[in-house]
Amino acid sequence: MGKINKEKSILGQINDLSHKLVLMLVFPIIISLVLMLFYAQKYHNSIERMETVASIKKVVTEEIPENAWNIVSGRTTFSESRIYVSIQKVKDTIGAISEQTAEENSLSLIVAGRTMQTLENYVNRIRDNIEADVPVVDNEAVLEEVRGVAKLVDSMLNDYISAEINTTARMSFSLRMWVLITAVAEALIVLVALLVRNRSVKVTASSVRLPIERLEEAAARIAEGSLDAKIEDTDVTELRNLTLQVNTMADRLKEMMKKSSLDARNLRKAELRTLQAQINPHFLYNTLDAIVWKAEAGEKDEVIQLTSALSDFFRISLSSGADWIPISQEKKHIEGYLKIQQTRYRDIMKYEIDIPDEIGDYYILKLLLQPLVENALYHGVKIKRGGGGIYVSGKLEDGMLVCSVRDTGLGMSPEQLEALKERMRQGQPSVSEGNGGFGLVNVNMRIRLYYNQADDLMIESGTEGTTVSFKVPLRTREEIFANESVSG
Image (cartoon, rainbow, N blue to C red; front, side, top):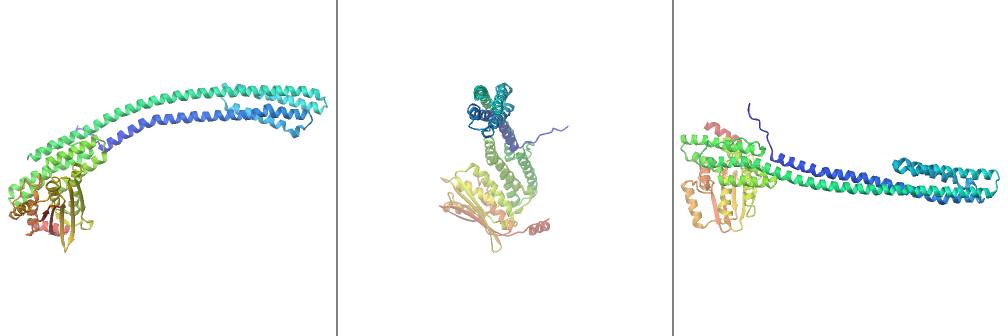
């Protein structure tokens, strides 16, 4: 049975790590929050009960005895004094608080409630004595009993408040213990999270580094001319397409080499040099190293952008063997190249591409602009102190496509410019030109042969930089396919 590989995405691995860390860190926070809310509610309920009990103490100790005295002294009647309303209010309040109170604290309230019934009985005796015209002296004796029972109820209510205070103190101690335990647990979890994070970063970096090292080795063998070199398939999603494109590029190069042995024309030889130059080991090493650095630093968006740009760079270079591609693809090709190079030369290079989308569907001979951009970078911007900018433009002019690549780099002396123009007139391509690219001479020759025109690249150079431009006829998709059918 074949080996089953689990495909792993760099972004997916980073997301999994983020989710694990979030869960590990959030869980104790949630527990702490729930505990604090629980104890806060218990605190609130206890304080609310104590305030309620405190509010009826004055009724028991002052209001009820005073009303009883007013009744005994004849200052008021039972109905006017509302003494029974006060007694019932106290009884109802004690009953309600008893239901809300824990069993260990409710005993004082239960006894207080029963004692209130005794107090009510004494009030009933006063009422019965008044109805029976009993002497006031007898009611004064009962009044003293009422006052004594009221004090007793007040004492019981004080006992309840003391018990509630003790319970609250125990809750405070429990809360402090839980906070301490949770704090220790959070510290341990943070430590574990850091260990998990470090281990996961190492695993992720390793899973990216190994396939990239295989890519580097294969690229080196291809650059040395070993076109049978193959890169093993990887289980990293972002590198799978890149691996496929490099392998396909090697296969295409091998096919092109076979064709070149049958076709000795300079054009085909230039195209082979063009394709092989795209797998520039230094360019590829630097790009792959940058991807590894970004992955180890956890910069997932940068890793994805660089990998996609490098994949697009190879895919468009290959273009399924097509010689002509839409201008939009050529624009995307140089965008990918410049994005990759800007990662390396961020502080010394800036760029702008001004190719309107309206001309994106017209076709152009592939790999015309990228070599000019590469030449501007390596021979202009890179070697100038402080760097410079690269500006690419394309436009329609009298039915012709006019493209230019301008840099604000070092520029060329008049002697250097004349020597370059002489080499272009002689049509002698230089594989060493362009620091790994195929150079302006090869671009100039391909424009001549494919477009069947005598106009050379137009080059202007001075102390403020160099501008390389060309003008070629517009080609539509229908024209390209018609010409290929006739030539086939």
